[in-house]
Length: 178
Image (cartoon, rainbow, N blue to C red):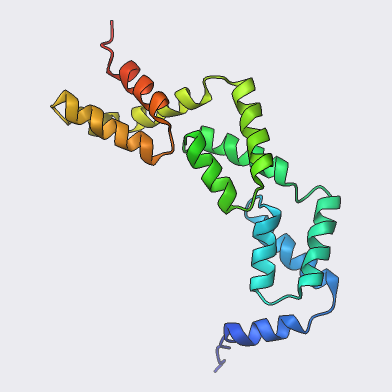
C-alpha cells in the first residue's frame, strides 16, 4: 500500500528556500507565479520573499524578467485598467486604490489613467452606466424614486466613482426611454 506524502510545513519550505543559491530556481518560481495572470513587480517580489527566497536572488529574477519584457509595471497597469473597464467597471478612485495595492507607483498610475482619459474621455461615465445596467433589476424593485437614487449613488460610490460622475450617470439612467 502506497503512503501519501505529507507536504512540508510552510516554515520548513521557507527555510529550505532560504538556502537556495541558484538564480534559475528563483526565476522558475517567478515564472510559475506569472503563469496565472500578469502581475506587478511588487506582487512578484512579495510572493518570492514571502516564500523564503533570498532578497538578492529575488531582485535579480525581477530584473531579468524586466529585461525579457515579461514583467512590466506600465503594461500591467494598462492591462489591469482595460480588464476592469471590460469586465468589472470601476471608477478612477477605485482603480487608483487597486493599482496601489498591486504596488504600482503613483506617478505611473497617474500617467496610465491620464492616457485612458485622453483616449476615452467618457471612460468613467461609461463604466458607471455599465454598473447601473448590471444592477438595473435590483434598482427597479425599489419603488420610491428617492430611495432608488440613493441606492444607485451608494452602489457607484462603492465602486469608486466620484460624486459628479455618479449623479450624471444616475440622471441619465433615470431618464424615461422615448
